[in-house]
Length: 421
Image 1 (cartoon, rainbow, N blue to C red):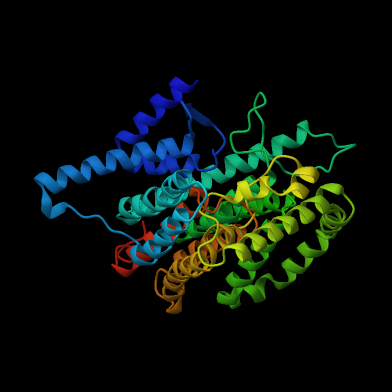
Image 2 (cartoon, rainbow, N blue to C red):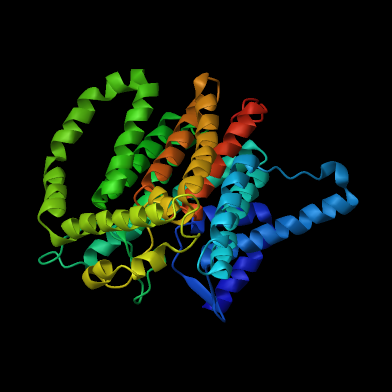
């Protein structure tokens, strides 16, 4: 099995463009891990590493023998550099400097180079952009269908039934938590909507609408609080820009809200009566307390990158109540503890630059507006989702953002407007 996976990785990496589509499709596969001595790497990261290796070899060839075609763009380089430098400095104040520095390279530098720089340089025209959105949509459908199948293996009499990742022979390639499934769909819904920019016949639009409805129903069925909050904000932002559609959708939306009333009651019971909901809330509150105490102990540069799990492990109350330590459920919670005030400010600057570019892209209703709006909203949704989840340094967050930045870059350079098909 692992040998076949490695062969697949090599084949996909030979052509970086095809490798990029594979990255979009396999992005949810975060829990199929390969081990080499003490190093463990997920399938998606290994695939992405292979793609970037081939890309760098090609760039090296161009630099040596065809320099006029050599070009590497570094999106958000300066704002990221400030955050990266802060993470390195905070690691130098860590109790375990070497492990903390390795965390900075393995997770922080890795997400920037692999999931921002690589796709930004590979998405060179509208064809590649269109194809990667199609593969995002296909991946979302596969994940959604697997969530539906998971219902057949759940105990409907004794458990709280919800859409969950599907296990295969005890292995959960996409993870074993409903949030890991929901964070795929929160971007996938609006990336599918962006395909209407190219697919504009009535039949194609109906198919995309049905796909969006299906993905939305599955997302709601995960009963993920973070997903519900993010989706609600996404819808509000979308209709704030599309007021003419809001008026048309007002009555259907009211009917949908009415029909979903039992779902709201089910969600209320989950959060207030079932131990799973109450325990989850208490768990996150305790993690926030741990984060705050760590911050007050070292407010400027924090406890060192990658040390949040150790902080939780040292908390007797958490270990007694919840068992094994876990990572932070929220990017700001983590940065506050690990990188202190300097980390919060530099990551805020990095984030501000991203969303300022998004804002500028939507400020003027250009010919690409109907493409850029759903892409921006999809990226905003997954960013908001990571206020409550653990994929803040993974491709699930940064690849969608890179795709959106690439689309903005193509629109700015008039590489989309010339023709849509």
